Length: 356
Image (cartoon, rainbow, N blue to C red; front, side, top):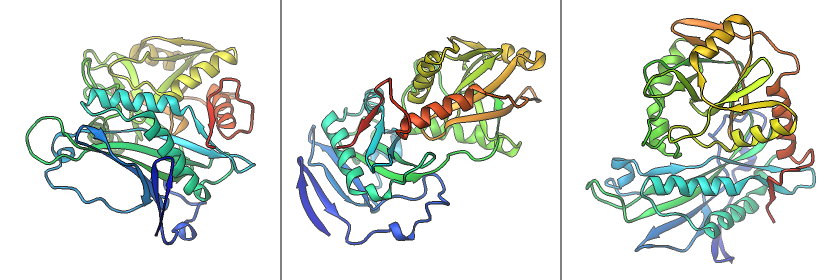
């Protein structure tokens, strides 16, 4: 290993690289990681020296509060490499703001922008060979923070670890996606942590999603916890509905994650002249539209999935399948967004940021 100093970040390079053993044409999402990671600890009330170092397991005290009281948050981001081998991030400022919003809600310290952004950039530059060019290829970025303070007393930790991992990625979902609309289980409630990207939110989804998987469905579309009459979001995605020529999506709230892909698609759809309504969408409205033929499309949107077409949905044991649509909004918006992210088209919104 060799160590250098860059912008107050210590860089310890791996002695060897794993890259030659990676089949980039057959990647499974989130299972392969690059040679290095970024790490910065919080202790004694302040952030300590940040470091980029070889990817390796962690050693934590068995009583670390992350294991017992669930103080754990994360983000999902992507980096892209253009034909000039330049590396680009997509709206990283939004991820940074959302990460610290999650930290505040989970009684964790906010990460300074310099640590978050500079650490990410140094990590990407060091492992840039892992970023593949071409539309459909990207580097998935996982910033996360966990409580590392020891002790099984139910109060916030004094110590934390902020880290960033990199994982080369292809498509998140392959094949068709069918969903069940939730009638009993809830993802989040008013006053809860639904708007935070907290680990427990995702763990709570696993059991209802497993039940859906056993019935042949890939995801659950969650409904409001009080009445189960309003459509909210899918397990790993915000969700859009096209009824006739109007694109509908639920407003963000304490229960719904403020998705960065979601807000980008809304702005992009409006710029394309599409009619977009951000308002509560009723389950009964969707079922009626499916029955009368006015429901044209359902698709999910998220960093990992980008845009994922939903073929059909089940509600109260009745399955409704959507007929294929020519010139779909989903395909239009996905092409526009991925071309922008991959620098294959102009960026009139100023969303892409070059890693210098």
